[in-house]
Length: 236
Image (cartoon, rainbow, N blue to C red; front, side, top):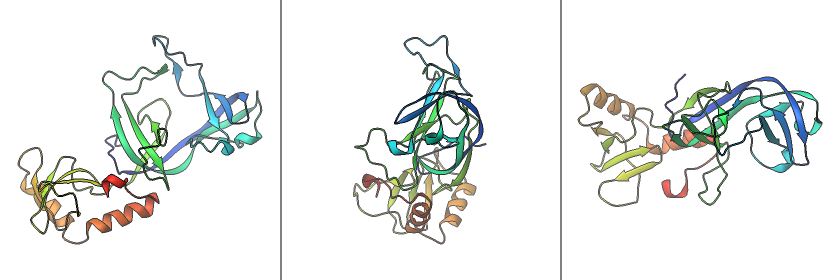
């Protein structure tokens, strides 16, 4: 499994359903004893009770973990299954923690991948729009890389486009032209100018071949078709 995710990646998530006990039911949430993570006894200022609240559908709060039977059919003391049905998401941000983050749970996460669901375009005014997952945590989430726009580039690459305009690639929809102009997108084919210094001949040839046909618009169209979203306004 590749854990080197980056903004723009389209992922397919799944987690096998496993038995859990319902501990509490309210109008908005069903709480279950979480079957995968453990309480961190060394965590100061964090007191996790070993349970997790899963929102009812009517709560209109996105949660990738679901129950079987559905949340609305459960009552305290019931045994249910909890897991993640096959779900397509796209990466908004990746966060790294060194040392691992203390959040009251074990294992402590060394990274979080912040994802958005299909149909959601990032809105900087929405504080809780994204959902964070620990890609190597105690929850056995299967993460498949479904599509990576500009997979032939690495973050920080510098390229020249067909018109001789130089750009720095910071993410699929986050390009910075060196001429100071904020309009336009890179015109294919692309020439790799810099990757951790001077690129190797093999790296330069790979980028040239990958962009010999197609366009930035083609990458965006495929990405939008999978995510049912658009890049954030400042990235378009």
